Image 1 (cartoon, rainbow, N blue to C red):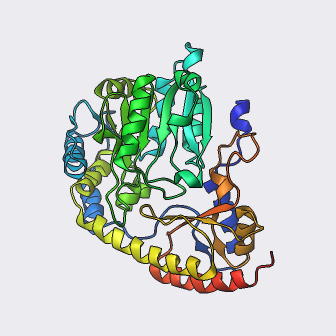
Image 2: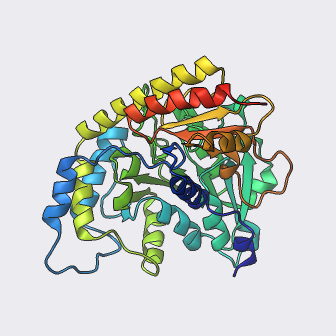
Length: 393
């Protein structure tokens, strides 16, 4: 096995699954705020579209996917962000965003040019940016995201020599795990630095549709050259199990990516693409989901304020990034809550797996995902309050 991959800690969500299985075996009721997989039902018209499209004979989908789906994505993107995307040259359907994010460095890191193999991303982060880089034989360059910077990746503070060796920069706003958002001016700044240094700017935008006040922007609003964005229906439409999303942006990069994808993947099955087409063509179900997430968010805004825990105010996503009680790490607090059936994700789960620098990723935080139902959130808060009061620091 590749020694770099072997050195990584277990994938965080798999570790959480093992913990939850042990709790179930003990007969403890679980309130799972660990994995970002909400329980709200997928809209009936999306499910019906999938069922109606299941064929008698199923055949391979293409890499390009259904033209009707790409056209639906193009319409949605124009209506949402004011950017016109060519459905034939600037959009590729994907199996959710995870596999597309993972595979992207395989196509674009040229191992014959060792002086241009670095991939920059902020930490804490979605683990796939680093892992995709390692599998592609690239060089991960994690940058610690700081509370005083509102967890924005500050490219302007990275040495010019590092930027010149960088092939890809990953940004992710609204951000997982912190829930941080970025203004359009931030995208403009990052875009300028990437263009100046011939860097591909990859923007993971899977959470742009889970917002509570201002609509988050897209990187493609500041330019297409050298920019690729990744979107998904997992969070927007409650379709995590469908595995459907898209990649869009610079037509030259899309053409190269399409060529590479033919070796390792295709679009989702046609019947899932039919369901995705319906999802991208409707906003009402998304508005309902945002209302539910807001109700859950407000429950925890009040709760964390009441028990005195510091957190980043979530303007978007369904995450809270919270500091553990004074004197404890996020991991220690998570272990304490497990005794009561409360599952949270310690912040270290989102630190780059190969980091060796001391304090390279803050350990005092934990993340909760607003996954349980509204009623379960209310129940969990009562139990959590008791657990917090019984805490011995």
